[in-house]
Structures are given as C-alpha cells and as structure tokens.
Length: 297
Image 1 (tube, one colour):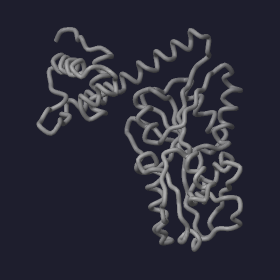
Image 2 (image 1 turned 180 degrees about the vertical axis):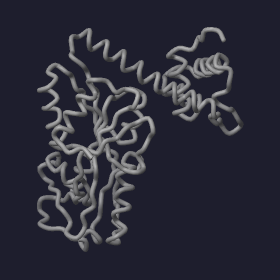
Image 3 (image 1 turned 60 degrees about the horizontal axis):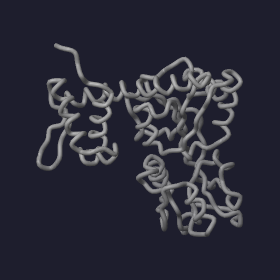
Image 4 (image 1 turned 90 degrees about the vertical axis):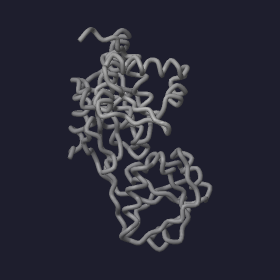
C-alpha cells in the first residue's frame, strides 16, 4: 500500500457531500464548482480503494465502508480545526481559547457563575460564546467548530461521539405580559401560543409534547418563530403566550415575566457537552469550573 494523497480538502468535501445529501448541495454550501467536488470525492474513493457513495438514479447511499470512513474523517477534521485555532490564539498571546455554544434555553446566571470561576483560575483564557440550537451544537461539536455546548438534555439528543453531563434542572413556566396576574391549566387550555419552529427547537418541542400529555393540554399554536427574541416580541405584542425555563427569567424583556403553572411542573435539564476526541487539559478545567459550582449529575 503506497502513500496516500488524501488531505484535509478531501475530508472536508466528502463530509460536505454526506451532510448536504448530494454533490450539488455540497458545492453550494462550499461555494465551489460541482465538478471540483465530484472529482475530489472520486479521487478519495480511488485512493481508499472502495466506494463511499453508491450512486443511483434517485440520489446516493453511503456504503458501510463509507460510513466508517466518514466517522473517522469527522474526528480527524475536528482535531485539525482545533489545532489550527489553538495555534493562532497562541500566536496572539492568549492563554487558551474556548468556543462555547449555548442554547437560548440555557441562558441563566449558571453560565455566568461558571465563567467567572474559570476566569479566576485561568486568567487570560478567551471564551467565545455563540447561541445556537441543540442540534446545531451537536453537529458543531463533532466538526470542531465549537469546543463546549450547553444544550437541552433529552433522549432525542444523543451521539456516541459526544459526551453530555447534566448540570442543572429547572421548571418550565409560561411567559406572559406583566399585566397578567396569575395562570392556571384552565387558562392554558384557552390561550393562544407562540412557539419556536420545530426545525430549530426540535428537542424542546418534543419535551413539551410529552409534558402536555398528562394534563391533557393541546395548546393552540397561532404563530411560530425561529428566534427566541422574535417569540418574546410577539408575546409582548399580545399574539400569544409561550413556554420557557424559569431559570432563564433574567433574559426576558422588561415587558414580560415568567410564571409557574400550579399543578403542572415539567422539568428541563441543561447538559454540558463536548466531543470525545477533544478532551484537553483546558477543556477539563472549563468543565470542572462548572461542576465545582453545581452538583453535576
């Protein structure tokens, strides 16, 4: 077996085809010509000696050897991205650099307290924060685009390449205009709601669907939005109410408040997640800074 000619570009293009579901979509995502993507994937398959994508009239399927290769390729690409990022930060004189993704549901003083402790223990470490959906975090953890994620802990959000550690739990309440004095299950049965689009709020919507069963709730959803701030704006405009974790009450606009519903107390758990392939000393220190403040489960 001779030396391989496969490089990072080959891994990146092949993964893009798998993730995009086709060569044309991958080319658009990569912003390059489709023939270049097709040629790179063909060269990769030729070098490996097996087919990654089984082409057909209605698209393609990933072969079993291809799945194994793609899993390894993702880990390799994630490690590469982290190495480049760390090297650039070291050149700038930073004492470490961590990119953190967090769900809008995880907005609370818990994260701030953990970051304060990290700063005391590791002054000079730069932490970059980005809000994103739980599904996007899981994907970005595997590709190396983020190092740590704070996401909704749910049975539908599992991946063998990502470790999750529950950090805190909170009750889900109802976000209402400040003019509303109290809420009840009967009120919820008659109220209209503005909810996050299922595509972007998949795991939270699944959690709510399960929580609605016992009290027999069938909320009237009159509007959906992608972004949480748009949801809050529509609640403030009187378009409807919404559901949100009580621990995130401080993030609400001044015109809104969050209230617990008597007789109905569904729980939401936030987990800290990281890629199994990127367990550095600094990331362990980051995780410990949170677990020292909260009883990690």
